Amino acid sequence: MTTSEQIPNSEPQPSVIDKMKQMVGLGTNEAPAAPAETPAPALSQHKFKRVHIIVNPASGQEGLKLPTLNKVLKDLDIEWEMFVTRKGGEAGERAKQAVDAKVDAVVVYGGDGTVLEVASGLSGSNIPLVILPGGTANVLSVELGIPRDQTQAALLLGGTPNAVRALDMGDLSGVKHDDGSSGDLLFFHLGVGLEGEMHENADRDAKDQSGMFAYIVGALRTMSNPTSAHYHMTLDGQSVEAEGVNCMVTNFGSVGVPGLTLSHAIDMSDGLLDIIVIQDTNVSTLLAAAANAVASGELAQPLQWQAKEVTIVADPPQPMVVDGELVKVDKITVRIVPQTIHVVVPAPTNP
Image 1: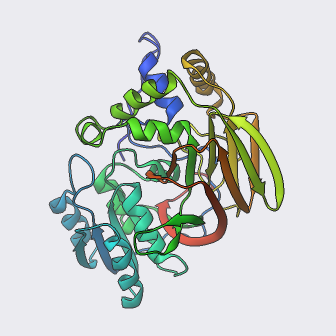
Image 2: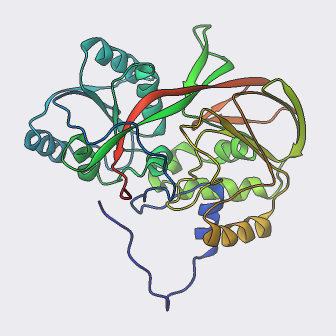
């Protein structure tokens, strides 16, 4: 696993842009490190002999290194079939086919959206997921400590100490699809307000060419005049009201920066969603929070709750981003689905 270089104390402190990356959830190209406090995985060291590989060819800027992956699979004596997706939704269908085929594991190469599709298709089964990070942010991989390097990630199939961790997902309602259906399984991060505006301002072509720097530009545009709203929330049947510029419902704490989390209280396996409201923000506030986070390792906010089911209505309506996808709805409800997906992760280093 590649690691970031140790920076001598004599070098300059992180720049404003570096701090902005941290605050708005923009990672670097450094390999992710395992979270400081990771719950014990459900299973121990495991090897897989028959796998399906699902590839999104549109993911990332470098693409899948097939010769490298083929060598790992050959060295581990793994029987495999590969499926390349051509349209949205196909990754999930391929995952369901893998369940029917009773493979030992499913490997996915792609960004957070592709990983989500495959995980949704595997939900409720005992077939574990192996992630080869291939997107721009790869926030979920950072959360789970999965190496960004494709070789090291592929070795989780049995060539390096591994474990299988059971994760919660969120069941989303309130979003209608083109075919008239509703509901989705998500990992789950939902941002209403600032995050949605930031996503709207990040140009797709710019994101492909310059990666996460495009998100910084979008954030700077948005923060010049953040829109405040009143959030009407129902948390496990209890009414909660709050004012702010951003309301998030999340099941993971990673913001895409290794070693930094939204809150140390967030746990992907605890059967709870975490709700955080950011009341006010400006550039100086964000930079101060980013600087403070260097010491604590978290970006905790004063308004924070936990619940198994959440309903949110923003007044006035605000743009919403769900697991990296922009959605437009007036009301949304999420409920937790406990430990419904299994993901292969590096074995914990502590006994």
